[in-house]
Length: 266
Image 1 (cartoon, one colour):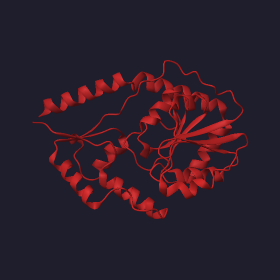
Image 2 (image 1 turned 90 degrees about the horizontal axis):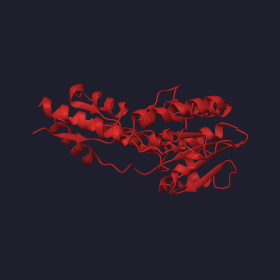
Image 3 (image 1 turned 60 degrees about the vertical axis):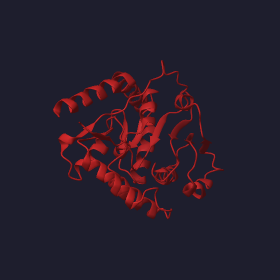
Image 4 (image 1 turned 45 degrees about the vertical axis):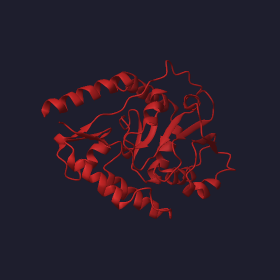
């Protein structure tokens, strides 16, 4: 019998190390992982014939820990793109949107630090999601800011995408964040990290910055703020990439082929 572990994030010890370091850096309580949980999952990895990951970042995290590349598979996700992108992006305000859990893991402290470094007239940062307890004191400092909008939980992200200019997702650790696929499908260029597991290419579909680097993040914010034509070009490239390669049908076909290959190999 062929066995496979599907790991939706990076290797659990990689995840543990990244989050432990960042939670300590930001004086937060320990991340929601324990050494016992890490050890238990590592035993599952060792017992399986294959590890299935959703991104190059996650895939590489296993190779970095000594796994044979033949036993680690990378199967990116897919989404159901909207029929059309009826975007309302003609506003003079350049809107940078973040959507996802407002947490240390998603890089929110670095995003806010980067936003404080830039002075962008007629620009706003919109944050769509609930705030984790550890970050509520930090977020409260931005509640009265005219250039920051705290939207809370949003049911209709598609509408948010259509009213935004750039999607910003500076995550420190992911598998492959579905929201990045959704934003690209809506025609938004991204500012994100390699660690987000995005499927785009730096300079083509957005700007990739190092994780936990507010300076590089600030530079990327300025660059896309200053260049509307570049925003449009990258957004179109991003939408095309998702529609042509990362739909749910594409994902289903990748899963089918990968598992068929694993079974046949054994």
